[in-house]
Each structure stands twice: as C-alpha cells, then as structure tokens.
Length: 168
Image (tube, rainbow, N blue to C red; front, side, top):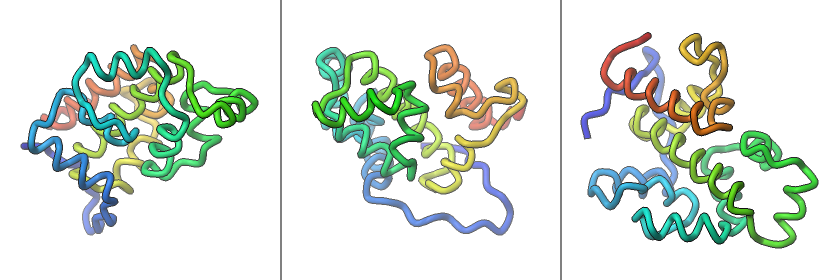
C-alpha cells in the first residue's frame, strides 16, 4: 500500500484504535472491495452482501460504532447523515436505520476509510482533515460533502490527488 500521507512537521501519530488496525490490516490483505464497512461491524466485504444489508437497513449500532471510532457525538454523526434528532431517537428505539440512512452511513464509512488510509492510520489527523474546509471543495469540509454522493465522489477525487502529490 503506497500511500502518501500528509503530516505537519513535528506531529506525533495518534494511538491507533483496534478498529483502525483491523481496517488497515484488511486493506493490506486486499480482503475485499468494501473493507471500510468493517467500521460498521459488517464482516462481509463483497458488494452483493453489503447491498442486501443496506437494502434491509443497517442496525442502529452500526452508526454508533462508526461515530465512536470517528470520535463524533451521535448528534454530529446524525447531522452529517441528514438524520433529524427526533428521527435519530426513533431509529435508536427501533434498533434499525432505513435503507437511505444506511446508504449514507456506508458512504461516510467509505470516506472515513479513505482518510484513514491517507493519513496511514493516524485517526486524529484523519478526523482533523475531514473537519477542515478546503478551497478545492468550495470552502466546505469533507464531512459536509459526505452528505451527498456527488460531494463524496469529489472528496475521494481530492484524496486521490493528495495521495499522488497534486495539491490543487
């Protein structure tokens, strides 16, 4: 895995969580095309399995798991996923997200995974980057862009450019 991480001079890497270690290990092993769903507690990384799980709606605890590893509060995670507070409470009570909410959660997991790879497992750096506004994203943060598929694709393109040393 030849990734080019962006680091500030003199910064120390944050402690990697077991979830991040497991993710990076799965990426190195080429465990499947959608390893980022491991952050949601999903064990199968093939497209058809994930598609079916999203179609049924992911368990609410998948959202809690991702929020925890990303060090986000549940209200912040819900805001990123466009889930209003009262709806969030209903989903918690029912224990399941709707398919559209599950799809956005998987998308957020994908972008988070790409950021973790960009920063070689440094969660603090990845989260800081995801929360920082960028001119290349019209002044928005990568987390704000994750609210839509076109925005997420643009974040992935930006990550790709950064991995290859193109800083525009």
